[in-house]
Amino acid sequence: PETVLVGSLPISTFEDLDEAIGVISKDNLVLPGFAVAVNAEKVISALKDENLKACLLSATLLYADGISVVKTIKRKDVENSRIPGCELWVELMRKVADSGQSVYLLGASEETNKATADKLREEFGVHNLTRRNGYFEDEQSIVDEVISLKPDIVTVALGSPRQEFLIAKLREVHPSAFYMGVGGSYDVFVG
Ligand code: UDP
Image (cartoon, rainbow, N blue to C red; front, side, top):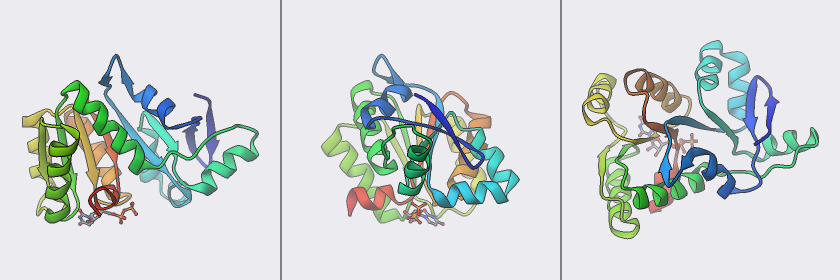
């Protein structure tokens, strides 16, 4: 896909969700990486905060999830569609059900996190799954768990930018996974 600079962030442009799924997977396997949904708030925060900018630039895929980002790209004469993070995550889970890759589902309340895991197992057929709610005492326990489990896919619902900073840290200890921050996606999924 064509990449367009919005603020300081190089955004990959896509015609549709399928095309986006195509770049994060190959031969039915989800590939290692770090995908970030970009909206206007992230563009502005990255311009103000060097640490956040570096964190977001460490991602392997930045995609437009926010109508003002989509419009900014169109004004540069590049066709693109909004890729809602929540929908990308659902399609990712369908891929994972097919591939049998392992998932670490982190974040949201215990109730939402458990309901998300149950729905993924029962309705999607995602069975290789470990879950942890987003109200943990110390981050190191999450880092340790990722080191010992070595999941193939890690999705993090803590809100931004906290989820992106944690993902950057997890990638240092376990770089071979695919990571994505999903904000309120689990709540939407089970809501
Ligand atoms: N959350 C969490 N731990 C916290 C604070 C928030 O797990 O300490 C969860 C919260 O339950 C929700 C998600 O993080 O599921 C954040 O959703 P929000 O809609 O704020 O994120 P956005 O999509 O706006 O980034």
